Image 1 (cartoon, helix red, strand yellow):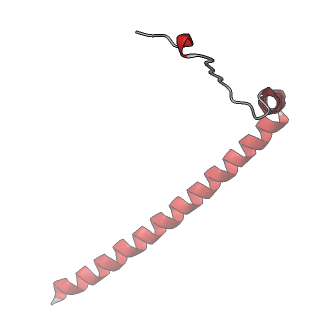
Image 2 (tube, rainbow, N blue to C red; image 1 turned 180 degrees about the vertical axis):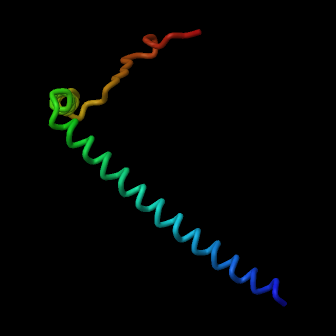
Length: 86
């Protein structure tokens, strides 16, 4: 009967350890997210970040104006003789 009490304590210790690990993991993820946010903000303020932002805007503007609703690839045949036969 004495051994079964140790099993209860062992189970409680394992549960407490899992909860401590879960809290430590959550804290580590929060710190990593904060660090990533700071790095992103620093990059956006840097010359490289400003250049990347300008390039993305230019690419978006160019892609928005490039085809204006027209298909990118147009294939048209006016008569069957235009087709290539094998």
